[in-house]
Image (cartoon, rainbow, N blue to C red; front, side, top):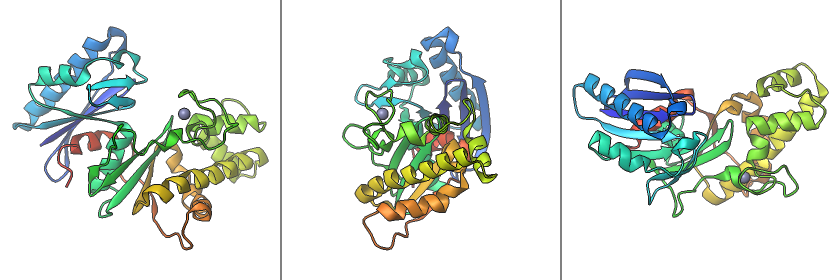
Length: 295
Ligand SMILES: [Zn+2]
């Protein structure tokens, strides 16, 4: 059986999957951020051992977490759980569990999950897109991750979309993430005269009820989605694109957004499916478990 553990800023979630991908057990604990790195490692190890004990058999363990992994050294280079940064997380967990583990960022886990038994099942190459607090992506070919030399393949969130755009935490200006993330979309709405603090779903709802400012923000989002995603398609030419993250719930992405993509793709009759994810918020933890046996 397979154990997947999703390490987030507020909770650590573990799932036990059987060989068919059926969820046997799920456990969730708060992330003990205030107690620091060793407490978090200890909780992850305890959770993995609990799930393995419940399974009655030996299990593989995969970990998913937001952030950037430096795979050669088994450390996280950036994470919103800052006490995890630059710590030997892989070595420490392997020592505590007495077995090798696999670890990937949440966008790669999402893509594995959607490829193995989600919306991208049966498609040769899947580009998984996260449009949530940040913008990320992952590329999976025949259920195997294509990480690239630097392990940044699919990180389209930091392609530059508009050179005079807002500053991004990565040091550049106008990255895709500064427009196509939840906060980016909300900031754009405010810049157009919208009310600060309005959530993405409320903006979409306002637009649906005829609010001019909200409609302008949504249309700008759809246009930017089109040009940004077309850039990725022209390079990877995936067989399917699966959207995840909070903004993936915006229906218009799959209709008008898709039309905007088609305008910019280097092909006269763009027919690549752009699909909503199947596993929703569970894709990350399921994909972490499925890092071990993608087939
Ligand atoms: Zn950036």
